[in-house]
Image (cartoon, rainbow, N blue to C red; front, side):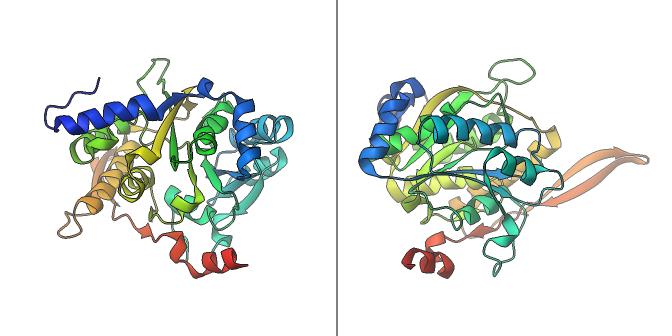
Length: 324
C-alpha cells in the first residue's frame, strides 16, 4: 500500500492499479511462452552492455546470455558491448565470450563523445538493430539470464507495454535491501514529490531495462547517470504510465561505489530532474566535495551541468540507416 498524504487519492489509486496490473515476476512468463511470443510476433532483440573497465564481470554476463538465450533458446538476436574507453581487457574479454564489441568513439564520430553512461546507451541505438533493446549493466556478479528474459517478456506478450524495468533486492555488505542508496536518498523522494505516478517503481535507477526501439529513438538521453530517471520521466509524458512496467528478477549483486562517487551521481540525477521541472532559472550546476589532504580538508569541485543528447530519431545518420 503506497501512502502519500500530499498527493490526491486519484493518483494513489492509479499507482496501486498500476502495481496490480503492470508489476510482474519473472515466473509469470515461462521462457517457452516468451520464445513463442517472439516467434509469433517476429520481433528481434538486442542486448546492450555499456562497459568501462569491467573485465572481471563482463565476460561472465555475455557468456550466460549467449549460452541461455542464443544457443539453448533463440531469444536474443545480438549481444553488443559498447566500450566507453576501458584501459583494461574489457573489450578482449567481452569478444572472447561471444559479444560484438563496439568502441564508443567509433559510433557517430561527427559528434565528439563525452564521458557518461547515458552517452553510451544513446550511441548504442546506432549500432544495434533489435526492435527491442535490452540494457544490462556490465558490473553484475552471479548473473542470471532471467534479468534479460524477464524484462523482454512483457514487451513480447503485451502490445501496450513500451518499457520494462527490472526490480530486485540489492544487498549491501550482506544486508538485504541496503543497496540502492542514491535511489532511496535522491531518486525516490524526487519521483514521489514531483512525478508521483512513477512512485511504484521499485528500482527506478536500475540499469537493467528493456524498451521498444520505437520509444527509445524518441527520447532525449542525459549523457550521465541521470539517464535512467530522465528516461522514466520522459517516457511517462510520451506514452503514459500504463505503457511502463516492472518485473521482479530476484537479487542483483554488483560492485558498490564509495560515498563521494554516489554524491556525484546524486547531483547528476537531481540536475536531470531539475531540467525537467523548470527550463528557466537554474542553480549553480556544480558539486564541491572534500577530501583530507596533508594540510587539512581540500575541496574538489565537479561539474554536474548534465548535457543531453537529442532523440535519436533527429540524427541524420540514424534516419539514413533506417531508410537503407
